[in-house]
Length: 65
Image 1 (cartoon, rainbow, N blue to C red):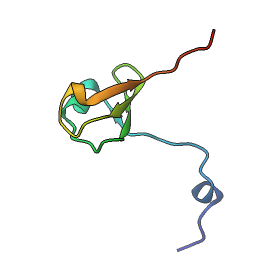
Image 2 (tube, rainbow, N blue to C red; image 1 turned 180 degrees about the vertical axis):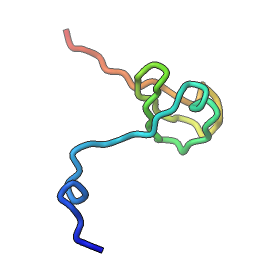
Image 3 (tube, rainbow, N blue to C red; image 1 turned 45 degrees about the vertical axis):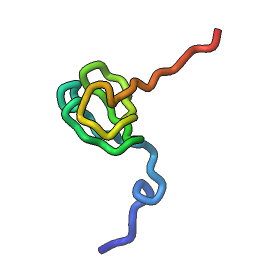
């Protein structure tokens, strides 16, 4: 085994797991899990450890006016 690369020591990005709406709704994830929803290209946050659409909340941003 060699030494870790700079990218391994200092990662430049975060890759989240990708799920469709159907896959996400069937998933029993830990509370706090964040996924990339490939059905609508948004981030979703798990707020309850139950396999259901209501277990997930969309992570949104608000623009200041």
